[in-house]
Length: 73
Image 1: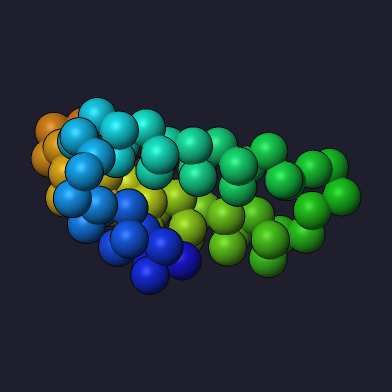
Image 2: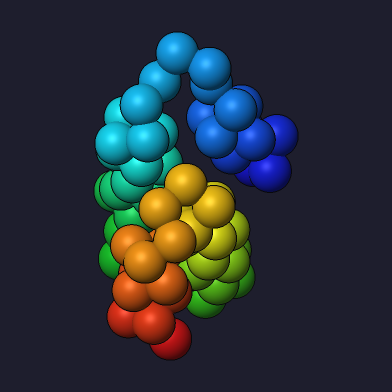
């Protein structure tokens, strides 16, 4: 996950907005794959991955990343 996030953050041709959009898309995919049959471990892993994604967003757009992290906790 961390290497995927670094790839997105370090794309030289992408704008900051495109980077944030791609990171949010990853986050949406994580939660789209959770269902009623998901275990508590799978839900915990999803939350940890969201935190990593929001921390990556914070590196691109500090205020937006801080807000997402605040809302998650």
